Amino acid sequence: MIRFDGVSKRYPGGHVGLENVSFHLKRGEIAFLTGHSGAGKSTLMKLVMLLERSSVGQVWVGGHNLRTLKNSRIPYLRRNIGVVFQDHQLLFDRTVFDNVALPLLIAGYSPEDCAGRVRASLDMVGLLNKEKLYPVALSGGEQQRVGLARAVVNRPSLILADEPTGNLDPQLSAEIMKLFESFNQVGVTVLIASHDLALVARMRHRILTLEQGCLVSDQEVQ
Amino acid sequence: MSLFKKAEQKRVNSREPRKTEAPVTQDTQRRGAKRQQVATLTMSTLVSLHKQVGKEAFLRLMKTPVSSLLNCLLIAVAFALPALLYVLVANIQQLGSAWDGQPRMSVYLSQNASQKTIDQLVRDYRAHSLIETVEYISPEQGLQDFQSKAGLQGVISHLGFNPLPAVIQLTPDKNASFQALDEAITQFQKMIGVEEVRLDRQWVQRLQAILAMLEQFSLMLGGILGLTVVLVISNTVRLNIESRRDEIKIVSMVGGTRGFISMPFIYMGLWYGVAGALLAQIIVLVLIAVLGSQMAELAGLYSSNMSLFGPGLDVFGTLLLAGILLGGIGAMASCYRHFQGLVPE
Image (cartoon, rainbow over all chains, first blue to last red; front, side, top):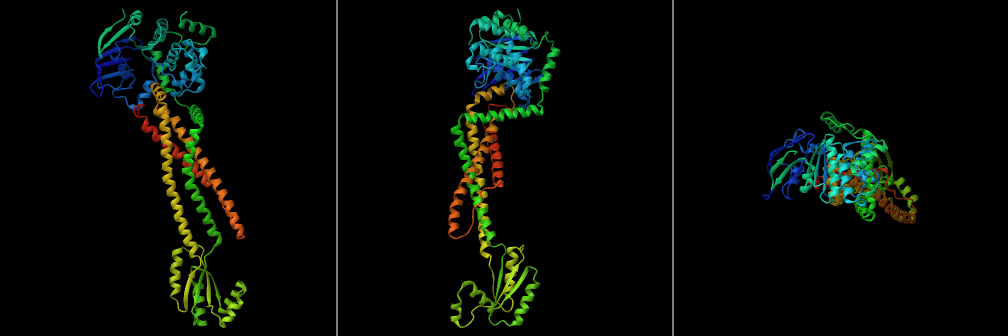
């Protein structure tokens, strides 16, 4: 699903984001990406979503070589990737329902088709009764779950999560992680960046560790 | 109870089918992915999307009514100036053509022209392709006309002789060009027995030339102010893009194309253009009404019933079209410039 082949990312000014990173995340796999802040976790995520392009090396996502993917095709790549952010990135002037419906709206679903899918998605994260609320009325954990519902509503084959539990207490974090596992169980590939080493260790999944832009360890499932 | 279990419980209760019931194999997953890509925009979906985005853009403008109105006024003034000039020019043009529908040509004959020469001239004019009617007015007849019209019998009878020359009145072909008439005049001027030839509509034609120039000027003014409208709208849209950067980023991140992301901003530009055109039409209507009432007063003093006509459907249509066009262009230009680095091209 995701393959990095000797990928480096250098920013103008000499800052190194990633240095010669190679790994392969197979379809249906779940893995954690850890490392201190600034180790390159976010850079790696950005390369997968084509928010940025690699300086050296090849990135493959879902069988597409991102180096040769045209700019005009980027939106269609992203529709196949569900993303979850630490700061939720919700639209605060729209209801929970509208936030979750956004990817469907973009993909051209009719409003009737949207409603069913949005509710199914909200149901999955346990927020069906809050669809009419605005994000400000929700707690941090609930906002994160709305983000999660939005990420999966279009049934992507890949979910990327950048510090999805960053601001949550341990219990909420564990619940969010369980949701990711449940998506993985139905065949979705999941890559979660997190610096919460204890939580990551408890989950017993593949762990990729970055340090100063280099991939220093790739622990398979114990 | 964990969140997930809660959700599971609810699903059972509501009997809603689970999104993906059985563990999904790679194959079905892939098919699912394919279906997403094929989820094409049908016509009705597209229409309802446009309706919704258009409505949202309108409501967004209504959220800040004062600043929106000020922007619209700015655009309206830029539209109203050339439109007003155009309507005024059209009015004067109308008056000019109402005063004298057909040009007339007066050929003044020299005092010593013999009757034979005069007859020859009349025959020549009758044969001329540009001339429609020919009327000979002898000095005596001219004197009679003059006395009956102006009530100045006394003045001329005191002179003791008739100072009026013989005149041949010509009516040229209505469709004859100004240039052709000019040529005919120089030709007539050279004929024996002719003292002078005058086209009595020359001044109207001069006025019309001036008006044509003014009309050109109003178009040029329209062009320059149209550019102003584009700049005003693109700047307003730019501010809106700035304030919605986060939203743009999010929509882009979940797969919104450039076109999808631009849509609300383009609708905003269109609304501004349309509202500006409407306001401009109202401004011109009001100004013409005020001017018209003053002119009616003036015309009343001269016991004439001249009146101004306001901007018609043609002006309104042009304004509306210009509003839509310039609003769209302004918004698109702004999107093109300010999406840089936010949205993949």
